[in-house]
Length: 484
Image (cartoon, rainbow, N blue to C red; front, side, top):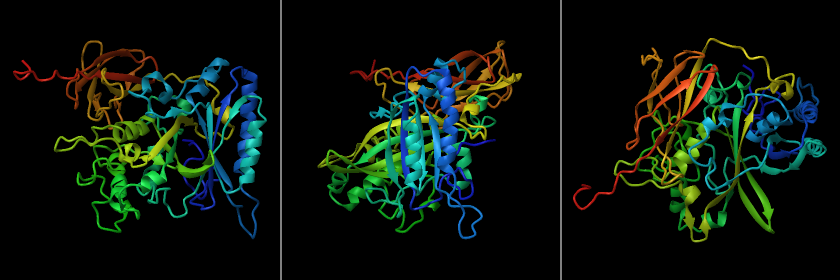
């Protein structure tokens, strides 16, 4: 399976990310295309883009007896949902990634209060030679296809700390698990993706301003540690000083501050096993004559649900994690915390992009529709949504909803039972004959006050994603006689 490039650190792969090079800087380059672009213009430009990317990521000439020259740059080429609208408008009928379909839409805005980045593509460049990046920018600026070009910059952490002074990224995905977390596997947990997307990945970016003066105005180090859930050296607050974060248990105890960033955002063992691979960079810039710092958050994952669960179901969800004493955990203190000088951070904007699998023949070849193979069986995936009609922003537990598939006679199909994970996705393990009609039956729910769903569907293609929605029905308030 070919995989997307510019994503995972690698010392050997010429097109992969520079491996912990302290000289690496990051360049986030969003573009928006002209609305009147033609098919011929787009095809010509995509062909020239391949050449520009090749020039950007080419190694330096070998010196001193080296077998290979120094790696100078890598790039992840991200395609936004609107890019696939552009393809359709010029007559390219490419099936869009499953994560960009209406069935995959999250229950509420993906980036909370932050604006969505208005871009058709985003190039995430990591480079130790700015001249290479300048040449790539010149190429983009000269393109007749591009209407708007932007640039945001980041830098590599030499001491692993972020602008508040805390070690960052200490619990990222282990290298042995990364390909499973990051890349689309159609033969595994992403059978709903189109064939061409196998080996691709979803890239999510957010620009988050960190307000260092506000953070410093908190009463003392203990208050600042309580926001993060760690001391500055990376030790979790419930563990002895100097404990290795990589050896921590996934089960986070209730003794940690309930709204701390570690308590809200970190993996939590078997039940909340959802993960994302983070590869962001801090930034510094001048705005209106003032220095501003923050994080260009960037994560890679095989489905958008993985990010959505971390950011919305966990971090911004006041009810998560559930507490044994019935108290409310509140939102992530890092995102919602207040100081004598105001908020600690501000999310400026966010974007989601699909990085296609690498094709030696170029990106145009990847995006060229091919004659579809017509298998006789297919698989079903679902996106579980729980909605409160009185509060559209509210999020709920989405793990543990159980299902089975029945045929037209009402018989349960053997091996069709499955459950949703903590990111709301579930995959039916049974191979279902294509062209037949079935009923998806919800057999149990971990969430009270919702009605179980039965949803009829026809498997018209071998990769089907269904959106399955429960409506939360708030119980009536108790009356003077116990609600009677």
